[in-house]
View 1 (cartoon, rainbow, N blue to C red):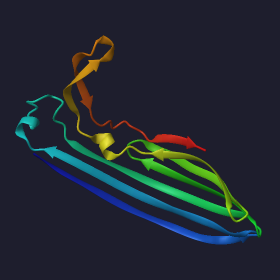
View 2 (view 1 turned 90 degrees about the horizontal axis):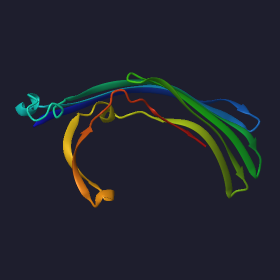
View 3 (view 1 turned 90 degrees about the vertical axis):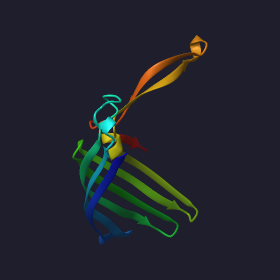
View 4 (view 1 turned 30 degrees about the vertical axis):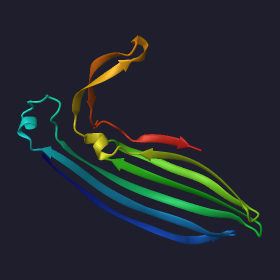
Length: 178
């Protein structure tokens, strides 16, 4: 038996508008900041697990928390607005500061062009990130026995120890895309 709980605090603000225009139309700008604080816990109330009687690795509470503070800016600029053609360029940048992994930038830049009424062309280059979840960082350590089969030794089976759990040293995953 056990207890599980969690909490998410979030706050943010953003400003959006069209502060000026070019020959092709209004320039759109957005900027803002966000803050998230997330915590999760699982506590085992089973006395055998608390005493470590079953295995020294089977009992470990999940008690994790992280914060992230972010700031962002986005801009879209029209360059051409003719009867049968448009061209817009856009960009965005976000700085994220994780209490578990430090700061990292993500960004995107691109262009969109409409040629004729039925043809839309878009190109985008970006750096995207995915931060580890709270369970990937702080999940309970476990160990267990499993049976594996060796297909190269006529299906010979072996008992192996398997270990699983979170890793508080994980950092954000990064993808550079086009």
